[in-house]
Picture 1 (cartoon, rainbow, N blue to C red):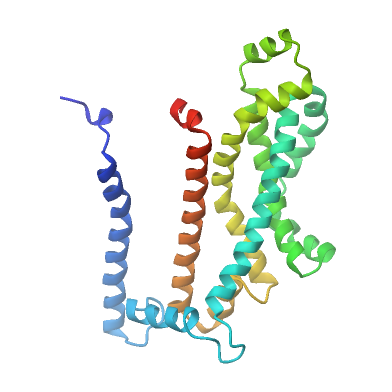
Picture 2 (picture 1 turned 45 degrees about the horizontal axis):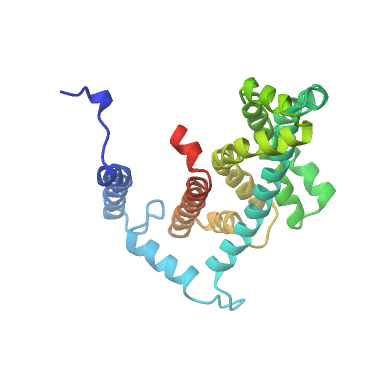
Length: 271
């Protein structure tokens, strides 16, 4: 008989087990909401599913009476554009400097102390500075994401580059490869799947910085909308927006995972 630690669920079992916590949370919420609304039907703290459905209908499927736009769609597109640019630029910078720091000792000795120092600065502490330098437009919000996650990406990819077996580097040098060839033909192919994995880990942090920036200075966006309606205690809007942000993050994470498995199957086979 197999020990429990050695048992693995099949594909169907993984889906069921993965969905189970969400179902339990939903049941718990519905029970708590019904209990509070039974005592006070006007209690805004835990709205019913019907109330949240009405809010979704109003925000997502009915044009705004003031602007004529679909607010949830407008907010979603604005936030996705900001996080897409911020994470994309961060990944590119992280890839370049991560490989350079890991592969070339002179660059590592020069830049590593600076990157370590920058990575320890709380990004939210310099948010006012970003708004002063870049203004209150899109650039400041994107820069907060870049400043927030780029040092983490660089440090992680630098460590992954340093973990490349030295025997591979020696063999390439023996075959006459120069530094550029070692970086592009040895380090880069091995680091790319790790870049996708590290970016997936940084996505949650990127969303935090995005919501914070939108809450402080924005006229549209998912974070802006949440902090706009909180003054009215509109939990029927806030909770669906939070769930929508979570769903968007899950879809982006799933997309990156599928791209990684499609493009680099050898990496997932070895891990």
